[in-house]
Structure formats: structure tokens, C-alpha cells
Image (tube, rainbow, N blue to C red; front, side):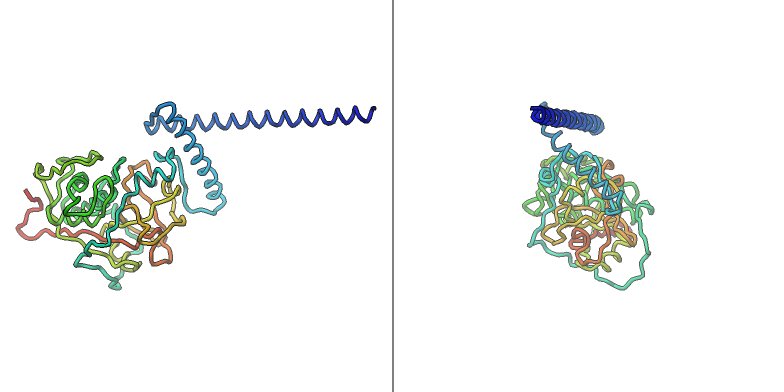
Length: 352
């Protein structure tokens, strides 16, 4: 009888302990949920995000998942297992699938003609490090917004640097003109639905391109309004840099801003904060889905200018690891070109 009572007492104590642990775990879980909610609400205020009640619940679920991934990644950083950090930027409430569908719009055409000029390795002595920003020839980081116009921003960034290197200072060119005008039927790009940097260069060489103040960026497709502009700059073509050749890439990057295609898929690129980016990614040519601009290099990395504003990455830039692979990190050495701007004697820089 006494033994039976002791057994019942032991079972009761165990059940009580289990219940207490369950309650404590539930309270701890709720505490963590509340803490993440506070972080989410602060993040919303910082980035001006407002949603309906239903949408907000959905976005919080994605944010919470991404936040957890960031925390785990940071542990790897602190353990010396990663060379880059990720964080809660403006894309933190998007799933990878949503992000890729909305922002990664670089198109590739098998039918597009190559430039009649190709830069091949010449065996030049180049500086150990180059940062074109220090020369004052790189324009400010811009933000393409929700329009899939990375290709236009990449092209314009390179065009602006070419202008500045020729002595035309503080000119910003119109990405919107490329979005609206460098499109079907004459070109293969599709505005906010994606395009190719090649089309931007071909357009600026054939028709010139307006300054941004006369043809401002609105992040939506419009009817072409190039004829309404007055101040336009005429370019002289572009150069393809030999693909899959790191030496040719660096030689070209020592002197020019390069428009390059990369594979920007994955949560790590989406939430990149700082450091040398060496995440695993598909580097095949057919995987390239985002247009960016190379504006320098160092022994360990390429300096890449993006078009997602200064709150992303290192004030709008990312350092791409230089790896021992002909395709380059995320395919950066696959599709590479730069524009030509030549001002001949007695020629005005501006086409009226």
C-alpha cells in the first residue's frame, strides 16, 4: 500500500515538473516572439513599411524566419567560419522567391551581337588596388526601387564613369530613358521586366542619352519621351571584355567601370551587410540574373556597385571575393563590358 502511494506520488511529481517545464518553455517562446515583434516593428518604422493586418502577419512570419537565419549566420561569423555578415536591410520581410522574382531581372539573349571591339589580356602591369571612387569618377549609389531595371542602372553607372573620366563632371544620366526607350522592337530589353546592359550601351551610342534631371527616374514603364529632352550625351560604342579571363578582367577594371552580370540569388546576397562575399552560388552564364558595376579591386576582392540604395550592403556596395575560378564569384567574369566615350576636337559633349 505504502509502495503504491509512493509510486503515485512520484508520477504526480514528474507530471507536475513536466507541466511546469511546458509552461516555462511556452512563456520563453512567447517572450522571444514578443522580442522579435519589437525588432520587426522598429524595422518597419526605419524602412517605412506599412501593411494590412493580414499582410503584416504574413510579412512578420517571413521576417522572423530571416531573422533566425541572420542569428545563425552571425554565430558562424564569430566562429571565423564566414567572411561576410548579413543583416536586417529593406528586403528582410521578403522570401527568397519573392525577392528573386521582383529584383533579379537581367536577361540574356543568345542572338545579341557582340561588340566589334573585344578587350583581351595584354599582360599590362596594373596597380595592386584600384578604387575609382577615389578618383571622383563614380556617381552616387542609386535605388532602382521595385522596377526590374538593374540592367539600366548598371549601364548608366558605367556610362557616367566614362563621361567623368573624359572630363565631364557631375553629370547624372537617365536610367528611365533606357527603361522606356531601349526596348522592343529595336532592342531586346523589356524595361521594368528586365533587360541587358548591352542594349543600354547600344542605345546611348545610337541615340545618345539624356541627363537625369530632364528625364527623371519613376520606376515604372512609360512611353518613350526622349524627343522631349534637350541635353544629351552621345557615346561611341562599347567593348566586350574577354569572358572567363580573370587577367583581362583586372586589366580592364584598372581603367574602366565595368558592367557585369552576376548570379545574385539566395538569402545571403539579399541580406548582405558587409565583408568579402564568398557564398556558394551557381556561376554558369545561364544563371546570371542581376546587373551591377565593378568600380575597383584589391587582391582579395572586386568592388561592386549595386543599385539598391545605400542601406543595402556597404553603403550600396559589395566586395566580391576574387576566387581561383575562371567564371569568378557568382559568374562575375562571364558577361563583362564597358562603354566608350570620346570627345573629338571641335565636338561638343552635348548633342542638342
